[in-house]
Length: 503
Image (cartoon, rainbow, N blue to C red):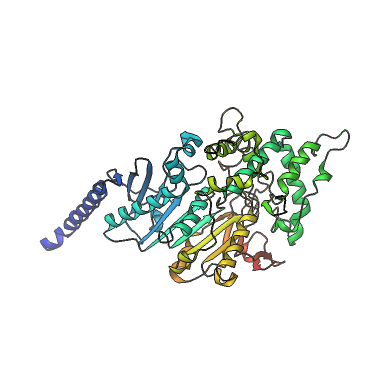
């Protein structure tokens, strides 16, 4: 054996060690991007584990408050996936789930910390950072970090988020159309002027005549019995809740009855939640909650005392009214107790403008090749699906029709899903591959396979709720307006037994 052959493994090992050291140095030295706009920490090289590949993690701050984080895998595919955070933000979102697939990832807390509660809404700059500025600025900073680390720009950038994260994602498409090539917006809370006053009204109804967990189960049983079989398959999932309704009057307790029924006051609260709310001229202001999944934890998570919050606090009765008060603080005549969600609806237009999506013109995003994918649960309590459907229809009207709009904007309704995740329907789905194939290969999504994983605890749902599903199964999600249709013969737990067709 020659000396060169003998030394070859040692030379290769030295080269590998040198490369690893260079990568570690490049990661650490990302702090040198610090300037008057960005404060960047030294990057940290994170070794591979059984769960995650080796990657560089760097954190920074924009404008003294907007924290962001970027993760950079060794085997980069040229793509960025940014996660916009739900709820009141205040935390860094997912920056690891797609590293093994080669994505660089990033997220931001939008400029405040969760422990502050709603107080950030009283600070003008923090409000705008939460509304849209934080995600936009963190996107620019993340792209700069990525370009410095890899020595080249991002090939394609993608954004995902649900609830408030879905709202922030849609505002990116409308207000900063050059930031992203593809956007995944789940249950987007893009209309605070609708969301907040309706929740205040629900909170008042609940305070006067509260629904408890037993009442929610009564409603769940009634909706399932009335509606489940209408699609030809009794599977615990209401495929299209627009086709059915719950006879609340029939659920009122008879004389001497106390179990399995509602008090007259509870029936009144339930009727209000199911019903649309119109203004004096008959125009729809607040759509009602479609029947289904009432006991699956979403209703309870918003209207019952929340264990995470102190002192029996509820979201509809405490946190949402507080948000409204903070947002209306510049109106000296505003009094929460006197606020009428119907008569005073227009008073909210100006204060909600930074937060709300007020345009159906997405032509700038479309014209540069952007793709927008929305997914929305049919049984979402706070963000009822009718407003997402109405927005799609308004975009179709503004952008030349349904066919033209489908070239860049598609929505997938999820039967049996509550807010963002959970519920009796198949709600787990990968939306990343569809958006990438659509944007990069021109393969528009028609059908996305979703899974119900079986029993699973979810933090955003009532901890004592039951989903009504103990098994795992799959279903197709169909591009709206099509819905999944059972073929009548195949395995009802297999998505292959379903086709997509217009109702």
